[in-house]
Structures are given as C-alpha cells and as structure tokens.
Image 1: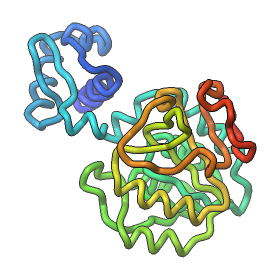
Image 2: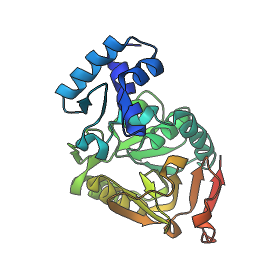
Image 3: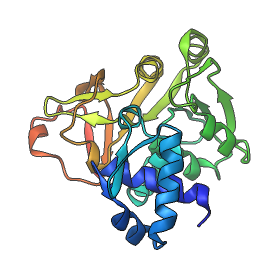
Image 4: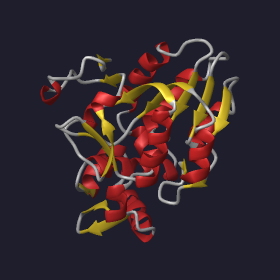
Amino acid sequence: MYQSERKQEILSILSECTYATVEDLANKLHISASSIRRDLSELASRGLVVRSYGGAELSNSQKRFVPFSARRHKNSAVKRAMAETAETFIKSGDVVFLDDSSSAYFTAEKLCTRKDITVVTTSVDVLFLLSQSDVTTYSAGGLLNRENRTCLTGSFADSIIRKFHADWCIFSVKSLDAGGVLSDCVEPGVAVLNTMMECAEKTMFLCDSSKLGSRSTFVQCNISELDVVLSNADIPAFLTSLPENVQFIQV
C-alpha cells in the first residue's frame, strides 16, 4: 500500500470511530507503529487529525466532512451491492442524475458499460470515471465547492440541471433520522440536490445502514418524497409506517 493510500485509510478508520490508538491503526493496516506515527504527524500538520498521547482523532473540520477518497472506502462492499441493484432500474434511453456521494460513484461504475443512457452529474469524480466510457455524460457545471473539492454547486449548476428532465435522481446523504427526515452536513450540496430531485421523474436513495437513525445539520427532504430506498438493512423499526409510495428494498 502506497503512503498516500495508507493516509486515506487512516482517515477512513478515524471517520468510523471517535478515536484510534497507534497500535490499533498499525494492526488494522499491517504496518509498523513508527510508520503510523509519521503518517499521523503529517496529517496533523495538514489540519486533518488531532494528535494525542498514543493515538489520534479527526479534527473538528474533518468530523463534519470526510474526504471523498475516504468515504469511497467506507462500506464499499455494501455500496457496490446497492449499485448493482440500482443499475437494474435504469432502462434504455433513461436520463440519470447522479450526485457527488460515494454511493452514486459506485452506481456510475456499474453504468460504465451502458451505451444507451445519459448521465448528468455534480461529481467531478463521476465525470472522470464516465469520461472513460461510452455513456453520454453532462457536467452540471457551476462552482467547485471548496469544502469537499469534488462537488459542483451554485446557481450555474442549478440552471444547467433545470435544462434536463431526468428519469432518475440517484443519490445519498449522510443521515436518515427517526422522523423519516434525510439530512446532510454540507449545505451547498443539499441545495443543488434539491434541484436534481425536482427535475427527476423518480428518486432513489442509497442508504447503507450507517445512515439509519442519525441526524445531520441540513435537511434534504422527507422519506415520503422518495420513490425507492436501497439499503443493506431491513426496514428499521422507526419506519414501520413507511408511505405506500416508497419502495424499500434490502440488498
């Protein structure tokens, strides 16, 4: 594993737990404690982690937002399974909105072999991925968001998205709380995703189990506004009264 990949793995591990010791990280990554200490020192110098005696935790800014490369590694097997199911909903000739989530990225991977669809995306990573395929791909344009550096947002993106009528908006957000409210931690992404949902015939939420029962700062929508929810979990108890129009599928 290259040093840059190892640092992303460290960030991914720290995003899943409050704190990790040097020993824990060394055991998980199968490298020496001295190498972990060097990596943590460099990450701390970049403001990504906070060192403490014997370990580290994410800095406050990183607790709010985890880099895409780290998010892509988290629950990747589950996200690939959801992507396989999501792809089966896409028919020939469909126009598909994909947001900048790591779950949508895995869906884009599954769509790479399709030649009969159109994708419109706010994700720089999805754009690069699909540029190597035969999928007709449009960038939403707009402002490159400084906070996550992978998402295109703002009024320009909004205006371009409104030029399309999509069959599907496939997306993910950070949280689904007990009241059935979806929310996220980065406001510009919430705003542009609202437009994508508004301009799509149907919406699909890719919801791995880590999102269930949590709440983030910015409200996205209510689950009653969705058409399909894909998850590796069964319908949680707090969603026993799921609206009839919402299809909840366990993958």
